Image (cartoon, rainbow, N blue to C red; front, top):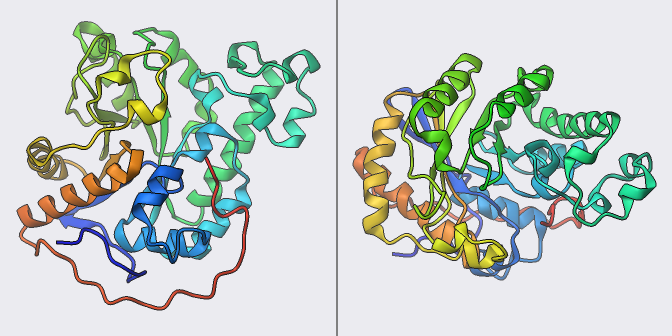
Length: 341
């Protein structure tokens, strides 16, 4: 069975299980190795047609480009005009907002211009070195992009993914509290990737905090090696996110490229238990996101589609969806649409 259509078809829709909408998708749509493997050649170099093709297969996507660089609000508006509802965009928070270093050269000109000159030449700048006004300006720019989606009812969730090596610390809660003015308006998903967070008292503290603030705990499927935790299947609000990173042990290694770390294809025997778990989760929440981050060579798309079909079969639907192809609108060049990562 061919997992993907040969042409742009009708927009994909989420599965339904009772009151829950189940959105399956990938954590990128323009990564070069993903694009080469996933898109038909006829749309591969056409940003609008490419996004329409993606939306004919999956009803949601996670925007990874927003982690690497602040995105303009106008780009979000363009996306919503290109793809109709119910397609949802999930946004990964910019690196500085989740304690990661970033290259200031990627900043919008208006923020880069007011950054102290000694910091402008630092290739990998820690947010701990930023003046408060720069960090506030960064939050404001990011918020404008997010709110362009939210106000058009096209926002799924905002992912705050903290560093893999970051063990338990009370500072994380203090940090989120300090920026509560922004977070209070958003569907926030928090992902921690160190086993210290999910053991003993730290586990109950984390889950209690997330429930108190109606933030979603991200259920992460990772290679269970070294400090990386096994999945903790817990819900903390009325929606939930499962992120599938692949089980490549290289995920826990330093200095490994993302292509190496996320080069993993889940065999069906590893996905099948997740279909059962997802069905159970869907009985507890009103919206469930199943997002695949093993993007190398399009493996995320293959696994996302396989899990979608497994779930569809479990929920009593047909294992195949046949969508008549439709003629794409004429391509209009738009350099901003692709949000290249």
